[in-house]
Length: 185
Image (cartoon, rainbow, N blue to C red):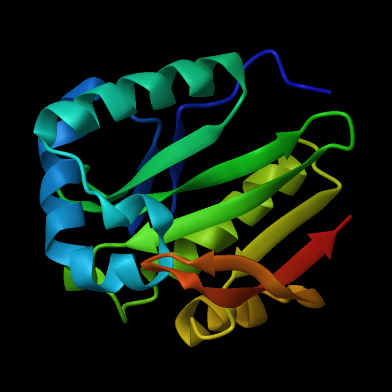
């Protein structure tokens, strides 16, 4: 059952996860551009990055979907809310089950500091404890070992490897697999 209200802020010891705002566009644009080579390896949306105006529109739509409970995207900031670290949130929501899939990316200038794990842990706890989820998934390409390691650190179980599940993000002639990890309650 979809909750009436979803908090716009989740705090961890080092991070502030906050629902997106259109005014976050400059910071989002800078973070994506700084991380583009790495993001393009895994993310379809990074193949054609947006300009600042495009991110303003993207974040406006994300804020609307957040308020409607259709997608719960959070921007990941340092604890003071000054530096954008990345983006995360719940996608593929199904409020009937209820369940969601956590997706995330971290600005390349801030990787290897445990931020993805801290973010996914906070969202996992939030999903189970506050949103009443019965299932949470993490999905990644098997070649994305850093993302798979986040799932392992958080006690997610590998449910499946979908073989030839999608095309490569930057090569439509390359078939790629998808790993599906989950935790249930």
